[in-house]
Structures are given as structure tokens and as C-alpha cells.
Length: 422
Image (tube, rainbow, N blue to C red):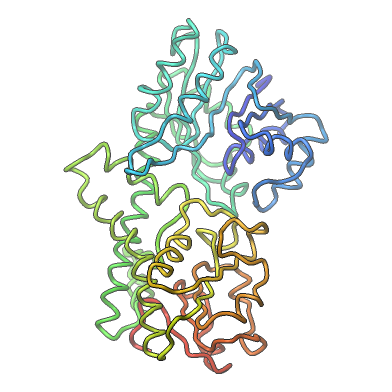
């Protein structure tokens, strides 16, 4: 069994991964450049929200299998799980990956394994990590083993998917891939597929880009539905009864650290050959503006000027506290550009992380001339509209998460993104 693992990056992927290995009896040392994140882990306090994480973290720390600090320690395996964001011009920012790799170079020894889990553009292992790792003086692939094994999990179900999903492992040598497979077999029940590092990098980015392109198709259909007098959600449901069709759903934009980011890696690499991918990104990036304009249109039809909008939901998806690349924040920007005042609320984001945010939903309801639901949180789905004390009786649902019948029965004027039929 592996003697020790050092996990660099204790965010939405690194921390659950570290905890998972620790819970399976492996000594894990977690590293993060954020001292507050390290302190919270040492104190068994979560700095991210994830189902089942608290109990697993408690067990890992209490049993002495998980420690944390701001600097790496000598280990047998190093897992890099740091952010790989995009720059303002949509090019890949791989500096976190480079710095994390450089930070472990003084500690690696002959026979060690280095794994990149971050989602990255193809050739990142080859062009960014290996130039740093060769500085160790070890021969790559025979003395120091290197692989890419991208996470394939979604927030809210990380532990279930860490265990059950198939995993792709790309080694820079066959031995690198085999050692990585052996490591993840400690807890992975899904099939582990072996390939080379660049193919593994491409596979992960392809998976997220497929979803982005599919959502862009749905968003185009939603815009068309406004002119066709149809409910696009109904049409998609019927289309998906076809055994070979799986159309995704529209929304106010695409967020998160994966689907909103990874396609840009392929656009940057592919240039003229990435036209569908590029167009899909632009389509999805246009939805916050479309949502804001639709909100303005509803207000205009009701003769309401100088309005206040309640933006309900700041997380990029339902039932998580993750605001990374959230379209909600861009919708708010677009609403403000139109001269509207915005007050926002999200039941999962416990500290105010946005200038418009209030921790009191009631406060938002009392100020607003229209309620715009931007995230499909369980708390919003379970609202009883008949009990709401709201200034406004106008609702705009951008996620098809509310019961139209119940809201209309409670006296609300109900609008749904992509639905001109009703």
C-alpha cells in the first residue's frame, strides 16, 4: 500500500480526494497556499460545501491520517489539484499548475509518482509540468513517474462519483499509468482506463465541451421558442423520448469551473478548426444578457420603471455554494447596465460574497418588483408561494424549477425562459 500522499490544492476537488485516501488508511498531507483554508481543515471546519465531506474530514483528522499546511512535505505520491482558470482574453492560465509542480520538485525522489488532477489543455503535462520536474535530476518515466488522471465528478455528488465513475489515467510512460491505476484502485470501483497523458487531457476537456455545445443548442432553441409560441422545455422533453436524442436544457448562462472554462482551451488550441466550439461558447455567454433583457421586457409590459429585481440564486448550479464562473453574477451586471437595482439572495452562500447579496430572502422579496430565479436550489423548489410576503407578484423562472400552477394559483404572474406558449 502507498506509504504517503501529498495533495497540492485543497479546493473542491483536492480536499475530497485527500479525505478519500485518508479514510482508506493512507497518510495524506494536504497543501494549500491559502492559510485560512489550511487552518479551517486543521480545525475540521469546512471552507467548501459538499455532501458527506464534514463527517469524512472529521474521521480523517481525528484518526491522524490527514494533516495540512501551506508547504509540501516529502511523500511517495504527489497529486496536483489546483485551479486552471482562463485569463480575461479566454486563454488558459496554467501558472497555478506550474507553481504547484515547482513546489514539489525539492521533495521528489527516485520511484515517486506525480499525478495532475486539474482539468487542463492537452499537452499541459508535457509542456508545463515536465520542464519543472526534470529539474529534480530524475529521469522522467523511469525514475520519476508522471500521469494525468482528471476528476470526473459534479459538486453535490463528489464522493459517490469518486468511487463509482470510470476513471481515465494517462501516463507519460506505461509504468506511470499502471502505478496511478494501482493507487486509485484503493477506492475507485469504476473501471480505470489507461492511455497516454495528452489523450487523457483531451478526453476530459472533450467531455465538458460536449455538454457546453449541447447546452448552446438548447439555448438557441429557447431563444427561437420565444418567436414560435412554444414551451421549449416541453419540446425538449418530447424530443428526448427518442432513444438516440438527449438534448440538454437552457438557462441564464453556463457556469462552474469546468463547462464555462474548458471549451476555451480547445478554442485556443484549435483556432479556425474549433468553430462550433467557439460559437457555442459565445452563445452560452450571451444568455445572461438575454435573461436581463427578458426581465426588462417583462417589467416594461407591466409598466414598471426604475425597478428593483430580486436575483435568487448566486451559485452556478443548484444545491451547492460554488460561485465560480456563475452566470448569475453576470446577469446582475447586465441588469444594472439596464438601470435596474438588484438585491440577491442564495441560501447556500452563508457569507455575503456579492455586493448585492442579503442573507435574508424576506428582505429581497420585500424590495423587489420582480423575482428572478437563476439557480434551481431545492429551497426555491420547495417554496410555498401562497405564504410568501412579497412586494411583487411577478416571477421569472429561468431554470424551470418552480411549479407554475402553484405560483399562478397564489396570484403570481408567471414567466418561464423559453416559453412563449403560456
